[in-house]
Length: 347
Image 1 (cartoon, helix red, strand yellow):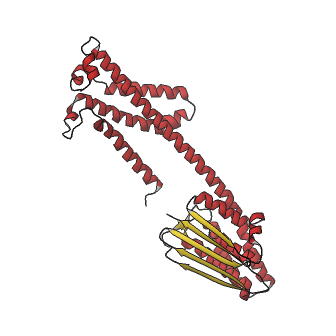
Image 2 (image 1 turned 90 degrees about the vertical axis):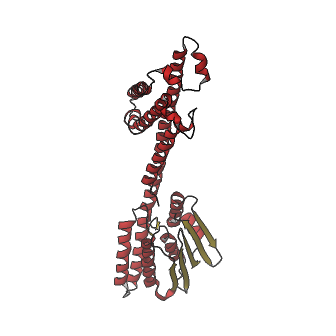
């Protein structure tokens, strides 16, 4: 899989190659014999396109960020003008009539019948060069502006995700410490094991939660520890089924994304006075993960989601930010049960 940096380099290479092909493809004397390569007019045109390519990268990587973005507009304009004059001088024909002899140009052939034929040719070359130069300059500025807009949008998304993650950690600590506190109140012998599970979960939170993406195995390991802790807390009060199917070795996912649905199942679906059921299933394919969570409805979860369920509202926003048009969340609420189905395309 090509990463962002390699993809950008490949695009630049292919774009540069396509740009340098233009003088060949659009030459008036184009033929598969490539005899036009020996003509002076083609050689000067090819040289000018090569200089334009250099100018594009000078503008993109230096003139725009160092001068234009720093509001040094006078220096920017002077620099652009200087590059135009230098490049035009380098690529200008030294003997226009001889170079023009190989041209199939009706306008020139008519003009050379007059005394100002050479001047017409030079003027034509000037306008053509100026037009191409301005096109390259505008293209560099538009691409730079587009990249800045993308960067601003990404920074906004990152800021929102950071805020949402900051909400997750206190949410996690409150829920988990509340579970251990319940065991301590009951004077359960399982408190040491609960603390051991909590330490594993806390290590995950401190080491992985700040990352944008992590291996799915780590997220599922966190869920497994959380389920184990809840089993200790509720003992025989709740019947928990948790299984994972499929290979998770090479896939990554945003941290603390799946776990919120599991946490809410225990938070709103367990009745200490009677047997409760929670079913958690994870199916992983080559490019997609599917999570299903089922629980008895003890508390009106819909009300909790809209009024005070920070966890689920949080994860919905994260899904929209991280997987736009790449996820499907279905919530099914019955009279005595509540279930969710989440599908995420990971590639």
